[in-house]
Image 1 (cartoon, rainbow, N blue to C red):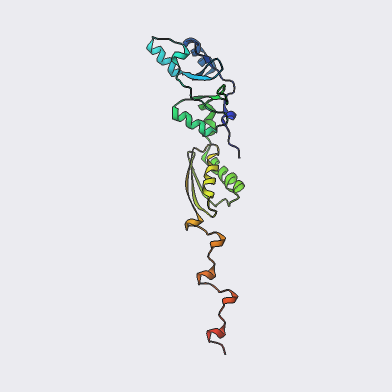
Image 2 (image 1 turned 60 degrees about the vertical axis):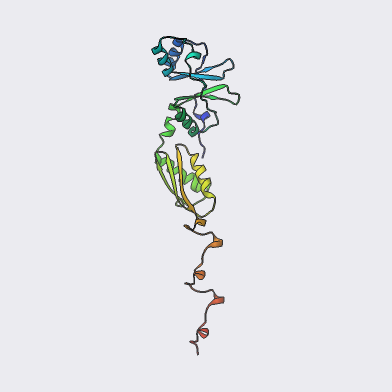
Length: 232
């Protein structure tokens, strides 16, 4: 199981402008490349802001003041790293209500752009497909559990796990693995462990029929007919 990263999904060749780029030049670039926003970079190719269609419209409506990229841009730029997961990038977009994220390297230099359209196919993944990957890859292949060990319900990318796990401490591991599956937006943990008293016990604490007092005794403790007083 491999979760796709921002580096896998981004457009590696990013259209960018300088601080002094004019209103008309930015509008032309947005139209030519079919994009909704463009990062503004400094002399070292580090994003300092973003100019979007909305920024251009606000400037056009105001009809006064400077019309350079620096004057119109939203700053600071909200950026992503190439190693991030698609889920992390999508959450950042939602939090800041942006449609595109400049992607920067370790030195903060622009190396690409990630848009909502890049993420669209990933997050339109069918719930059934997500459920099957969790069951087959996570539950069976990685954790080596029975396919029926955990009940998996998926609704609009929201995964709910329920059931009883025999191994203590396995729940958090399972949750983290499910969070890395493409298309998963949230994981709800409703699982219990055997130690909670609601599921099977570990071998060391398993009750045997003899310990219950209701089943046959071991040979060493079996009552004979003579001991019962019923023998000759």
